[in-house]
Every structure is written in C-alpha cells, then in structure tokens.
Amino acid sequence: MRALLQRVLEAKVVVDGETTGQIEHGILVFLGIGKEDTLEKGKKLIDKILKYRFFDDEDGKMGWNITQAGGGLLLVSQFTLMAQTTKGLRPDFGPAMPPAAAKELYEQLVEYAKSQFENVQTGIFAADMKVHLVNDGPVTFNLEVE
Image (cartoon, rainbow, N blue to C red; front, side):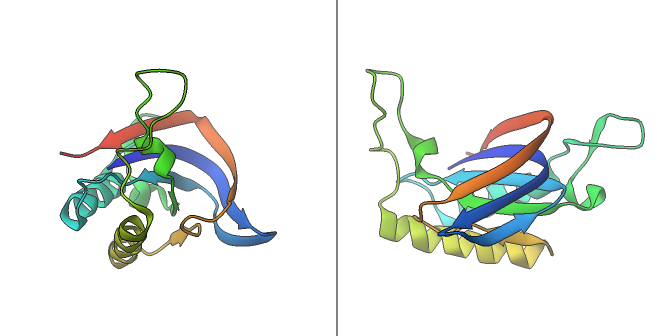
C-alpha cells in the first residue's frame, strides 16, 4: 500500500462536473492498494498519515500533524501508484489489487479514517476524477508501511 501525500492550501475532486470531495488547508492523499494489502496494513497507514508531522508549527518547523494544524483530509484512490516502472517504457499494473477487492478495502479504509478524524472527504473509486489542488510548499511525501 502506498500513499502519496501533498500538503495543500485547497483541493477538490470533480466527477462529471460535480465536486465529490473538497478541503481547504490539509492533506491530499493519493492511495494505491496492492495485491498483498490488508485492512490492518491500511489502518496502520491511515494512523501514520494522521500523525505525520509536516505542517509548520509556531516556530516554522514541520512539527504539527493534521489535527494540530486544523486541516482536512482528502482521500483519492489511485491504482497507478502501484505500477512497476523499473523496466520498459510502459507501466505494469500487475502489482495493483484487482478492482472489486480494492474498492472494498478502500471503502473500509475511508470508514476507518472517518472514525479517527473528523474532516475526511473522498473522490469516487474508479471514476474519471479531475483533481484540483494548490500544493503548499510544495510539500509532497511518499509513505508506505510494512
């Protein structure tokens, strides 16, 4: 499981002209789910995201997590994060979890995130999403859990 985190001033997901999720200041998370991923691993990743300190504190250092910074969390499924790109000139999506199982796990992770944090928004799994964002910094991190 991989998460690409971007600290944003604002972000939203639009599907068929309708906004499905929107936050102001916070974290935009692109989430890739692999064949071997589990709910337990996903919960560990969500916990890490919520505790990860990459917002500026009162001293201008990356010392605050999303709760301390008063931000929102926008979760967007993105199977392309699981692509193998080391060989050739075309991505290999073999490591990604099949869509039906990935959707079920993604939805469980969204529910878990909502149980742990108040301001969670989402895109729509497997939809043609248009993601709008203003990256703050820019600050972007790639997180994985074992």
